[in-house]
Image (tube, rainbow, N blue to C red; front, side, top):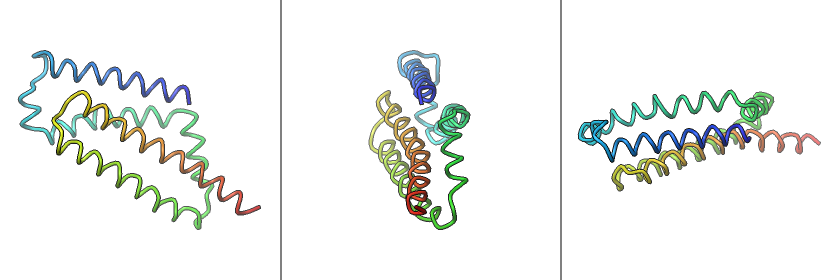
Length: 139
């Protein structure tokens, strides 16, 4: 877990530097980002979110959670899928409202990152909870 926290904190720090350069200097094309926001979000996902998820998947914590998920029986997986659909529907809804009603700022991007990181953490934590429930029901 410490490794995952370190990765996330390094990521947030680097991302904060990136957005500081974007907003406070002329190193990045601010006007292009504002006019082509949908493309900028895809770039953000490709260069920041996907690498973070790939790094996180390599941690021991996530490997153990995936092992918990793989060992679940079919009866336990369907309620878990419904729960995860609700979690991610909530995360995407919050992110959509955040981007729709607030201008792109440091706070907006930090909150958006926190939403997706929280959603990912809750996803993998729910694998562990589902496994514990399955074991308790079998006893």
